[in-house]
Length: 354
Image (cartoon, rainbow, N blue to C red):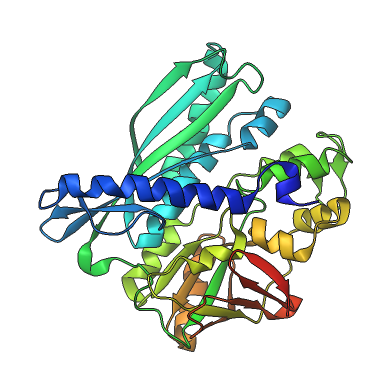
């Protein structure tokens, strides 16, 4: 089983992104010489605009994706709001920005106050974890559009940063150490593949011994929010690059302004959900690392100094998250990712045996 066979062809999605970005970047000139002029191309973790006086506003929009289908099937909506906030806030901090405000867009097939209350509960919890204020949003009733799924949830977030404190991966260099922070599970990416693999072989509410709970409960585990520890790390550690590991798996590491590669020499044992997906769906290890976070939800690149790893690990553990030394940055301008424990190398969006 592959993501493409499940209905999501990553190569075609990326091609569509490139077409869209080229079109949208033609609008940059409308703000030239004015407040709000974009200072970085589309395609990084957040849009960055110049607000003057050395200040930058960061912008990001994202959705919960097909995780809402699991929420609907489980009739449990109180955690997808956390996912919505997480998908935005975790991307904002990849630029060194502090998330400050959030807006939501909730679309429903019909008015449902009880469902709205549950969704809002998760949004509020996520915003508290990320240190953001929810300043508004929009709710739409669109029965013809959502006749089957019944709900869609999208979020938009803003962050602030000084120009001199932006983290864009332009200063990362060969020999820098790569540190990973553990995920809480599958997060909010690859759910189309996971759902189709698992539900062909198991019932949603079936308790799976190796998970210690049902498939539905496992898939609804909220996306971990990394804002508190990352902002704390940025106060004392000279961070070179930051990466939210989402829908492109470890290929999110290629989102650096400077072209570099990575040699990953250690990967902690992924959570049981990933082992189950591989076993049940006969999904290749190459596909797993291309689609899922595989237990590492966030990555930092820092100078090679053992004291920095200890400091980051201490900060992460203070909020209940584990951190690991994964490997180091290489000088590969083709941006290859060598995943040594699995004997595979990633280039141009796909992994293959070495």
